[in-house]
Length: 352
Image 1: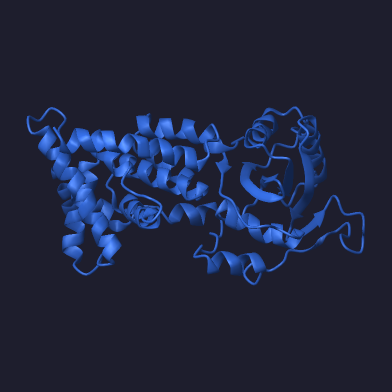
Image 2 (image 1 turned 135 degrees about the horizontal axis):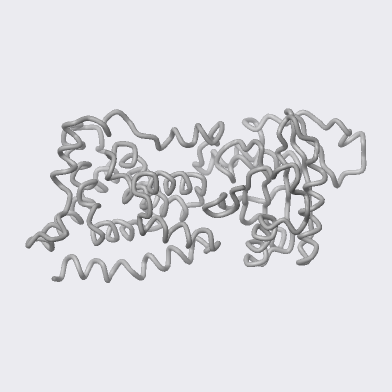
């Protein structure tokens, strides 16, 4: 079973939820896609919605409240200072044990004095609340799932600039999958020619040029001119992808965004991961993962790290980010750590 963090998923925060319909509409936005065969826990603190976590639906034999993945999930809620939780079982069509599994989770939550405020079972397009005793409100066979697109939550999220959730995990993975350019011979040669040789006598000059290439490409995204000259854009992208093979350039890129530019850098790294040739994916995938984590797009962050480790198994930054994220670090703490490192990286590149 995959569990929260990088053997599962941790996601961002949302507005107040006032009904089961709101909760059902909110989960795909919190997760990033419409979950199936999943358990989802949402933390509450002082009546505010906090962190959302998803794990794969457990095997049929795992209903014990001492089941280790439940304990690890709940540890995140404890670390966040949660005083309540919303739990939802998205049961497979051939399983009817959602109530028993949620009861096990509730027992584990009660041991740490976290109250279950809502418990929903979703199966075969229908839902019901286990905490509602009114059979007219929540009949045993449940009610049809509400239309998410017309929900209050969806309207609010879209109004705040958030995209509609992906259809499923495969749809999400496709959003950062390789484009044809990544396998074009001429583009691969351009990227390779710009890779940094760590043993080169001109390493410091190459690092400065690499950092400047990141700034140049970012300026195209900021100005909105990407696409005006495709050949020039591809050359600029190749320079960045090649330069990111150098750790100093990569770490410079990691610290380049701020609260104002985070969405632009997210778009840039997502574009680059899709055109990165094999062997050049891991650095930019880590950059995308870091930015995605900071902005609350946990599902994209996970998928990006997966791509990094497929490209280069054991890639050190991907391994580090996985540990940091799975430890449940708040995005603000990760951002602060990144900002503290950036001036030192800039000094090493531009002042030597």
